Every structure is written in structure tokens, then in C-alpha cells.
Image (tube, rainbow, N blue to C red; front, side, top):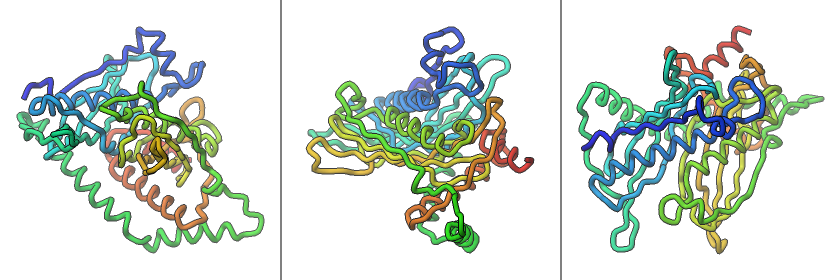
Length: 362
């Protein structure tokens, strides 16, 4: 298996391309963290697709790949819009028809800076006698200690996700029940004026067009992620006293493909807060062109941190779930954030732990 089929690199030459810098800015002013992270999600998804397709085509020349999930993007530090960004993609694990692609995002040069790492699950597909089916893949040959370490970590992530899915079906622990009870009791107090989860929601509608086609008859998954992220950022702004910047992508799941002509309904809602952190859940519902079917296409969970102009974290108001569904979303986001913090604990500094550390020190 050629090295090109397992590794790829993509460079965003921000340091020398003024037009590119302008495109990636959030605001037309100079401030730290002024970078459109949603556009980076598009780059990451396209790069993962390219390296995964290269691998699948070694055995099936007619294969294509689709994104099944993005797992745990921890942002180590904010992007410097004046420096180049390099994305390194490697295939870490190969199953029967699926692959894990790991992507490391960094600023090259001196000093080099690790911006983020992310892991995408890609699924290989092909057409057999007019029917779409999974494309079986060649086993991954692990040749170096680094490749063996990455493969082992990929297996651990798969097992962790399996256990998390089981945990979501578990009822609240005693401490979790008491936390939810406290939030509900507060709403009964005279003069309560807290932030209700049900009022922290934004939505948008749009239609898909042929120019957005990526794989046959389907819309580019990176575009969907970007739109969900941008709407979630707007939603977080409804609660953040300063400005929200992304600290983590907890997870993005792809359930059903979005096809040409579909109508999309985007919904983002604040579901949980902790000190300076804001968790926003986003969902994308697709409605077929003939309106005969609808389905949840994507679910996303993003964690933002509320910072000032110097990137100093500041607390946000607590949020209060009211309904059973809001309780469930609050609980799921709380568990996800705590797992992220536990995973990051003891590792290199990241925005998530830095924000919580600053809040504790304050």
C-alpha cells in the first residue's frame, strides 16, 4: 500500500495570501482568535475524504467515501490568522468497510504550535449492479511504532464511544438527579429570572442545490458541519456576555445522507453551561424534495468558551432545563464535557481545561 494512500497534507498559506486571510476572518478587525473555525471543518472533512478515498481505490477503483462521524476535536490554542496552517491526515485504523482518519492541525515554523487534533470515521461505498453497498477494504499494514500506537488509540476510541452510547441509556446518578432537581426547584422561587433552555434556541432553513454535490447525488458533509457550527456560534452569542470561541467539537454524527433538492432545517440550542463553557447542540433535519420523507441527518455538540478581547475566560449564566427532553440534553452534554475534561487532564494545554482552570482560580 503506497504511502500516498495513507497520508496526505494540506496547507492554508495564510501568511502570504491576503485574500485567504480575509475569507477566514470572522470580523474585520484585529483581535486574537479572529478565525472562521467552520471553514476549517470543511477543509478537515475534504482532506479526510481524499485520503480515505485514496486508500479505498487501491482495491476498488470505483469506490467513494462518506463521513460517518467526527469524534472529539479538542482545540489546543486559537488560530493565528497571520500564520500558515498545515493539516496532516493519516489513516489510523481500517475495519471491513470503515476507516478512522486522524488529522493534526498545526502552525508550522518556529515556534511550531499544535492547534487541534480530530478523528473522523469514513465509510467506503461502491455501486454493484446499480445498488449501493459497502466497499470492503484491505487490512491496514502497521509498519512503525507510531502507526501501531495510533491503531491502538483508535481501538480505544471505538470502545470508549461504545461505552458512552450505553451510558446514555443509563438513568441519572444520585448526584445528577440532585443537580437537575436543584435547577427545577430554582424555577419555582419567587422572582426567578434565570436563563431557560427553551428560550435559547435559533433555527434556519435552506435548500440544497446541484452545485453542492460531492459524492453521487449527495451534499458535501463539510458544508453541513460548517453551517451547523456557524448557527451554533450565533446561538452561543445569545448567552455569552463577551464572545464565544470554540473549545471543542464533542461529536458530530451523520445519520442520513442529504441529497440534491432536499430542504434542510437547522436547529441549535444551548443545552448546558459550566463556569465559562457553553454547550450547544445542533441538529439538521432533511426533508425530501417531494416531502414524502424526513429524517435527522446530523446531530452535533459544540463547546464554546466565553472570552474577552484578550482571550481571558469569563463566566456565563447558568441555564435551566424545564422539560424532560431538556433534562436529557442537559445531562448528556454535562457527561460529555466531563469526559472531555477527563481525557484532556494531564495532557498538553487546551482551551477547555484552560477555561475551567481560570474559572477555578477566579
